[in-house]
Length: 264
Length: 354
Ligand SMILES: Nc1ncnc2c1ncn2[C@@H]1O[C@H](COP(=O)(O)OP(=O)(O)OP(=O)(O)O)[C@@H](O)[C@H]1O
Ligand SMILES: [Mg+2]
Image (cartoon, rainbow over the protein chains, first blue to last red):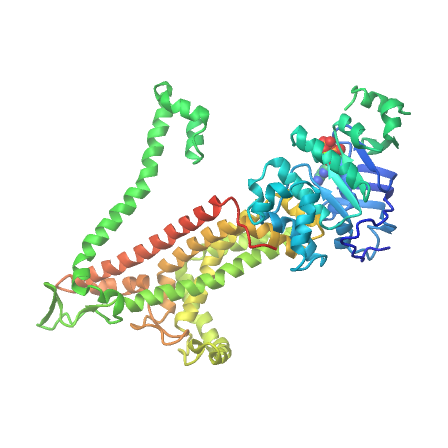
């Protein structure tokens, strides 16, 4: 129960992972996700896969409460992050989102300078101050491998960067809050192979200190980087298992079909 | 289709350019459309040019007569028409004692419109942001209806209301309180007309008149901010206030500047409401409540009697005031365009560090 803690810098915090219990998400009464339960293991990469429209994005967005802002979305059940149900009564949503970072399918940098993109959120959360924010910005940009490319244009617009660089900037922006969990929704689907490869390496490395959930349509990618796989169809879990099992010896016939490319 | 694309103002794309070189392949319908749109695009420009030329031609004698005193003198007097003597300056003959210093009207026009602008921008932008982020969707419909209604109120009605209701109310209840500000800001000191007629009342009514212009543009701009961008801020645990500051405002800033300049142009040229409310005094305002007059309201009020001037100079002086107003409007308009182009060309606004 550390939802009020601040541990910038000390990123070795042991994560408890994310546990979803009886999660149902409805849109205007129609269920999009029907009572899913699953444990996303700490310090592991879990790939969420499944045919289009099966509820992958919906599941991901319920973990950091992004549905709060969509009229008509009702969430019930539990999502436990670090021992705290994020839908509990007196939970601080701001702190939940500090702990649970999210990277979107397409890069969405703020229309502010490159440095501000990384530094504004930590400043807002009181994790950095005027004095040390520059160090934080440099540290995060270095982590994602963007520092050399942008160090001379920190005060320039992020929209001059390539798509891949923008996505890395968004990753740095998320990491700057030192989250315990990071949610990625097809983060590389719009990127070139080199940046994709780079982000995959980063995911692997980041999973040493956080829980990583990645939605992907790219099964090769899932098999390259994931430790576990959660396979969804029509808002339900079909199979939740280790990546090795899922790709080589899945229990469910539908998983077999999906892996071999017959569905999805 | 190609024509439509070209008219939309985008750079000529590949196919469009090809089509232009092969214009003989256009159908008759296309060619007619091309011709009509060409003419339609030229009409406003030709109209503006025509009006400017007419005004300049009419104003020239008054300009020669006055020289620089147009800008430096606040003595505007169309002369004694029935005096047998005449005033003659630089070879131009005008009624006895005629003087066409426009300083009063320039000051009146600029101050009333600027006060209105300074008040209307934060009210409209702040209001729209509040409404879009904090107030339930249900209120959006009624609000936009209200804005449209506000925009549709005829200015003479605004003037009437300002003169009979709003002005007296301000004079009785608000100005006495405001005058305490005189300790810090001297121009809030002093007296005002019992019915509130004067600069501040006129500016406040102008504020109401330009709020719909700025607010409706802002509303459309805010709606066009990409959801993905605002979700990025929310996913970082930012509050709505922070999201507005970090994402929404940078996205809408250019458009707001443009609409503010549009509103300013409207305030500069507003005639009848200002005429009824500002007091039409022939002098610059003595304080923020003071009576004065503007270029537009003076033309409206005095043009009729100007025609009784046997030398014709009074009408020419009016043309000169009209020319000044036109120049001011053009300057705000062009500056607006320049500002917008400069801001939007530097990719996107960017601050100085964190
Ligand atoms: N904001 C929304 N309003 C209404 N329906 C929605 C909304 N978001 C998602 N849905 C519906 O929920 C279902 C699951 O959508 P979701 O985006 O989670 O699928 P997905 O698995 O991420 O698909 P994809 O692989 O195509 O991204 C779909 O049927 C979709 O139409
Ligand atoms: Mg999706």
